[in-house]
Length: 247
Ligand code: ADP
Image (cartoon, rainbow, N blue to C red; front, side, top):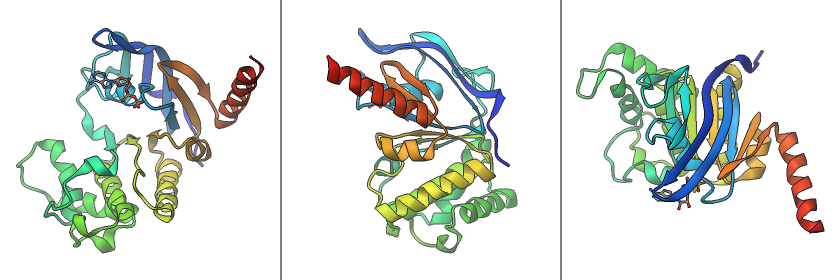
């Protein structure tokens, strides 16, 4: 039985503001992501979603406010094996990259004890498990560049899974992926969330998809415009439209 553990926060975002130079991009954002949650982070282009993601990953320091990951300040957090990250397919890698699917997934293990160390049997077993979960084991010996967009994204999920992370961040993960592969991809995310209790943070501009998949929605447009269940989001969006219509 899957349940969100409201007593445990994986991430706490507390009064976070951020400016690039003089330009304020985020203002006073506060919300928490619970263990086992499936959060959809939505908002228009340029709303600050990627910036907030970078702050959550400790890559940018907030101008004010604080983010904690598992109770530790994001800027000091070092336990990266607990965090998985799947980017847009297009920014992932060079298509001519001469590596097999299995090798790409194994690379996800090198961060654990540093690059250049010898791979262990444990690394290979973890890569096998991750590829099986992502249903890509049978493709393990193919070159990554020869796969379809949807297949490649499953490999990148497997690479993110190979350290058994507690949270997986996905930034527009299905850009350029065909419709059927998108269905399969979201089914895999549901499985990870429900069966493996992975906490998921999904950034997407595909609002209908996010509303259908996520358990909670955080809507950002410089400030936190809304935060709640998909049903609450729909109600607020409808009220907002009516408000604009009556003006
Ligand atoms: P989203 O992911 O919601 O599209 P971003 O976080 O990428 O939004 O961007 C928020 C705003 O910050 C945008 O107006 C964007 O142009 C600006 N921005 C993003 N990155 C930088 C940067 N490195 N320097 C200056 N401005 C930036």
